[in-house]
Amino acid sequence: MTTNDLNTGEPLIDTRSLVDKVEYYLIDLFIRKKLNPGDSIPKEVELASLLRVSRTVIRESLNRLKTIGLIESVKHKGTVIKSPDLSEILQKTLIPNILDANTLKDIFEMRLVIEVGMADLVVARATPEDITELFEIVKDEIQPSKTTLFDIDHEVQFHGKLYEMTRNETLRGFQKMLLPVFNYAYSSGLINRNPETKHFLSHKELIEVLQGGDAEKFGLAMRAHLENHYSRIFSMDTEQ
Image (cartoon, rainbow, N blue to C red; front, side, top):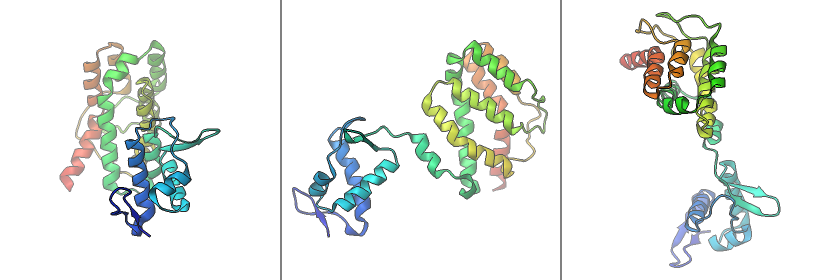
């Protein structure tokens, strides 16, 4: 069975991948209709008639769209458009134990870039309570040396708090997505190598810079704090 364009009669959907084609066609249809989050989509029977496919195909395609968070069922309203949670979607596919080393390395690099780049948000939105909590997190932390690899628990707590301080829900969700990969990078030995840098800023020193309220200085301090991670990554590049 082939679905034809309603205007030209030309084949519209290849039956070899009917559900896939219908899924993409539905997304295009919602865009052309300029549907926004909360707007109801046409009923299954209407979509089946429009695309000239069975309701079973429509239902399976809609289920796929629900899985990626593009639509949802609302009581007394039917199926409506939903603004998808990007970090939640990625979390479903980012399974550290089945990602190869290159992908893990790429994601870890992405984490480094994000944390340097979010300095402005952290400084602008930090509260005295946030600063107090950061100091509490690092109070028992050892001072860094040439070969220090921060304790994973301190890393997770401290950097997780920085993401929280951005007050950016997408960034916070993204951080939750990165954590399992970040943990795996440590436990697998992916970045467990001797860094070239002799000294880098500790978490405590970072907080002291943050207290100054200068976003540019904090961004530079964050880059210095992460220097040994960058050195490990760059040393891996030279070995390839």
